[in-house]
Image 1 (cartoon, rainbow, N blue to C red):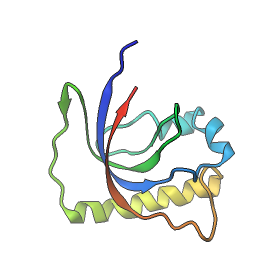
Image 2: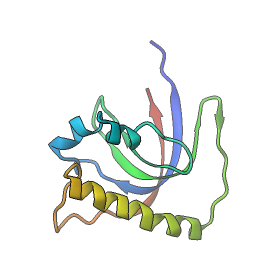
Image 3: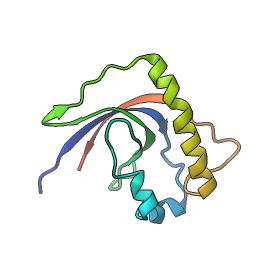
Image 4: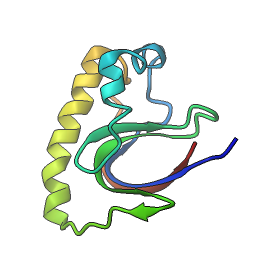
Length: 119
């Protein structure tokens, strides 16, 4: 079995261990798949590691690529600041739905996250 490498730069949150039990089934629904399957520039998406569960990222895709090429892009800090409100409102929506922890002590930090995903 061959593996493919995909590379992402997102502006968002590390939500490892913040998903609820509902998340596991929800992500396979039509609505959930909209947050999982559109992992391209300009989308707000989840990125998870179903094998080890070592990460769960949620954010706006600033750039993406694979071993054949990278969607090189230029963005300014102001671009990241603009998308932070969109990502935060989507996160709040997901908390209201019960797929992400809604706890008064839950204060995720908005970051630029660069990572490789192998599947």
